[in-house]
Length: 198
Image (cartoon, rainbow, N blue to C red; front, side, top):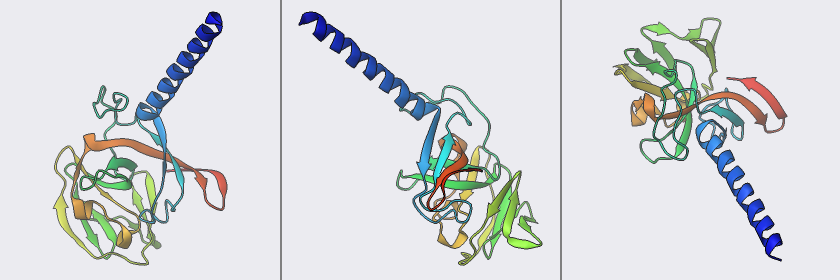
């Protein structure tokens, strides 16, 4: 009886250690995010499951916000995950400008450092760095005056410009507040398993 209890105890301990390792990896290395709203249409759709690289901008202590190492700086066009500075709720948005950039929005269209980011042949697509934003302009969302982004901060926006509560409302966010970079959509409603790099 005693040996059996010891064996069960060891197995429970092993399962506990493995669970802690898995949860730590999810907290610090990689995770997935379920898109809750239409604010990122048409790049991301409600219900999309997105793979998030949590080491892209630096390694953090599991379950905490302490940064151990510095990774890449967020780049224009990247889709990132962070906590809302207003509510603390986890959000997913696109970085549209970084430190020292000048930004303006006219009728939902982005002007970065004075240049219109929309493709001339298709204004519903914007080219941001090496990324393409597939915009939903059914509600363009008005204008945003010319602003310069302070060093160490970014401006984030949704691709559905008229239906996104984003940096135009809550302001710039520090680069250090970003948890990770969205890598790809791996599951989409009505399509099943997919792989759509972001």
